[in-house]
Image 1 (spheres, one colour):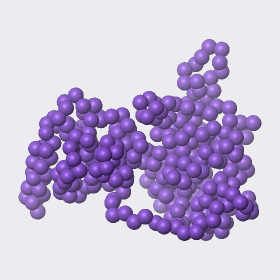
Image 2 (cartoon, rainbow, N blue to C red):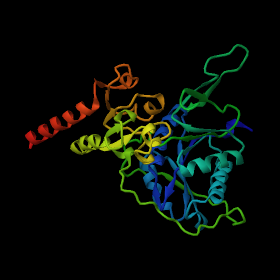
Image 3 (cartoon, one colour):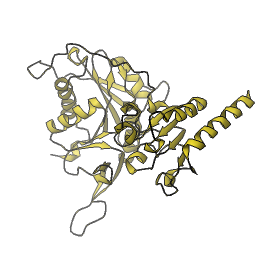
Image 4 (cartoon, rainbow, N blue to C red):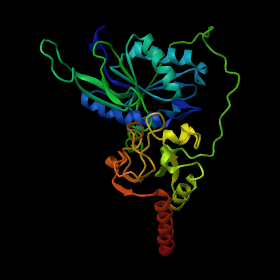
Amino acid sequence: MNLEEYKGVYVFAQQVDNEISSIAFELLGKAKDLAKDLNTEVTAVLVGSGVKGLADQLAEYGADKVIVVDDPELKDYRTEPYAHALASVINKYKPEIMLVGATAIGRDLGPRVSARVATGLTADCTVLEIGDFPLQAVPGQEQLHNQLLMTRPAFGGNTIATIACPYNRPQMATVRAGVMQKIEPIKGAKAVVEEFNPGFTPDNKYVEILDIVKAVTETVDIMDAKILVSGGRGVGSPENFKILEDLAEVLGGTVSCSRAVVDSGWKPKDLQVGQTGKTVRPNLYFAIGISGAIQHVAGMEESDIIIAINKDADAPIFDVADYGVVGDLNKIVPKLTEALKAEIAAAK
């Protein structure tokens, strides 16, 4: 493999029902940073049917070029045709870096594509940067520069691993939703659009979709919330979440929770914050009755302001909190809610 042939930072621009997923914009933001360090361009790979019209959106969020693979066989996500499409793009255009969102689609697609193009894949990354490999120079071993260093939690979040793929290309990673930041859209931006179709011949690996049933949920996506009131096992019971819901209602926020709450069956998985849940970046995050295990902190530490309420003064959550209150949440939270109600009423 001639590594010098591989250039550019590529992003798989996931779309569902001809609507680009938020993770694609997040990856483009990070891709621009990486491309700047490598003095190269950002290319989005848009796969689907009738999707060419979405290219301008990708340009507004940082794509210099958009490769469109458009075919009726790609109308709905299916493993075989999508893997064929993306692997064919990689084999033809030879990207140095290929980023895929760690969504349900990306976690299925990424490993299959990496196997087809004979490269490695680092899954569920939370940090990406350009640097040297090995990280520290080793006597007698060449230190390679401008490598993609891919960082992800390992061993249940108890350690952090930084991984490189120095001898194969592309360097591939799936990236957790919510951990990278979108850029402010560049209104009116245009990208170079190139259409590419490797040809699709259905065979026994092409599954037939009989029906698509869309789940209906009344819960707000906590990744979009500006204010989150999050509860942990310390809340005590599912009924006790009512006091958190009252606080969230006054603030115009949303209730979320820790993994312990989900494991106990108190709240649905959609509301879980943390390494095995969702990564959130609200303007204001209340951590109530949450001890602050590393797995939870990994999902909320980028919040603008963190307020912790816990009866244990030594709880790790206070290490990441901007403000902390030590005491009984059953007394503190209702008083806080009433005080906020009074303030809001006085301001009207």
